[in-house]
Length: 298
Image (cartoon, rainbow, N blue to C red; front, side):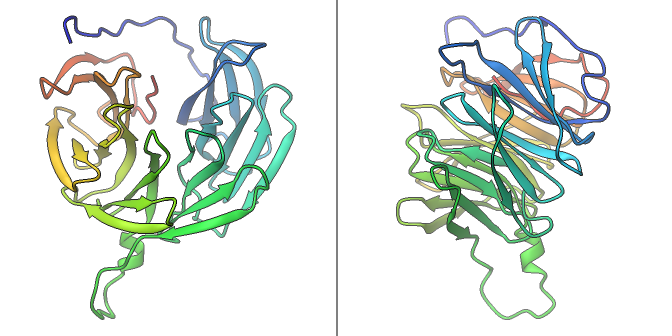
C-alpha cells in the first residue's frame, strides 16, 4: 500500500436509537436509489439511513426483543433482521413489505449473512451449534451445518454450550462458510457438499465477528475475539498467518476494506482501529465513541 488509508469523521448522529446499536451493515445501491445504512438495536427497532447526511429514511418495527443482526441482499432490494425473539424478518428495503418470517427455537438466531450470489441466507444458529441455510427463492430451510462435538464421552462436558455459534461469514466465491463459537473455535464448511472441513485454532474466548478477504485473497479469513486479538487465517490451509493486538478490550467487530488492503475493528474499549495487515499493526485509532463499539462496516 503506497499510501496508507486514513479514516476521517464525516457525520455522527446522537441517540440514533433509544438503546445500544448492536448491528450495522450497508445496503447496496439499486437503479433507483443510493446505498443505505441499515442498523439494528436493543430498542427492538431497525432503521435505514441515507449515508451522506445520515438522514433517517425509515424505522422498521415488529421485533419484540433486541435486534442482534441485520443483513442486506447483494441486489440491495431485500434485507433481513434477526432478534433475540428468535425471529428473522425478511423485508423489501424500499416498501418495508414483509417477504418472509423465519422461525427458530429460542437463542438459535445470531449473526446472518447472504451469500455473494444472493441465493442463500446463512444464520449463525447459537445454541443449536450450527449454521442454518435458508433458500432465498422459497425461504425454506435447506441445510443445517453442524459444528462437530469434541470426541470422547464426558458427561460433565457442556460441549454444546461451548460450541454456541455467534458469527458467520461467506467466502467471496460462496463455496465456504466460517462460523465462530463462544469457546473461540472457528469452523470451516464446504457449502456445495454441506460438509464440515476443519477447525481453525488460536482463540480461547468468544469469536463475535468474522470476515473473508475479497478476491483474489479469498482464502484469507479475519477473526475478532473477546481475547483482544484479531487473527488472520488461511481458511483452506488451516494455518494462522498473522495475529494483531492493540485493543484493550474485547474485539467485537471486524471488517475488511473492498480492496483487501486494510481492516477495521470495533471494541469494548470504545475505539475503532484501522489496521494495515502487511505492517501487522494499527495505523489509526478513532476515539469518537463513548461506549462499546459493536459494529464496523466499510
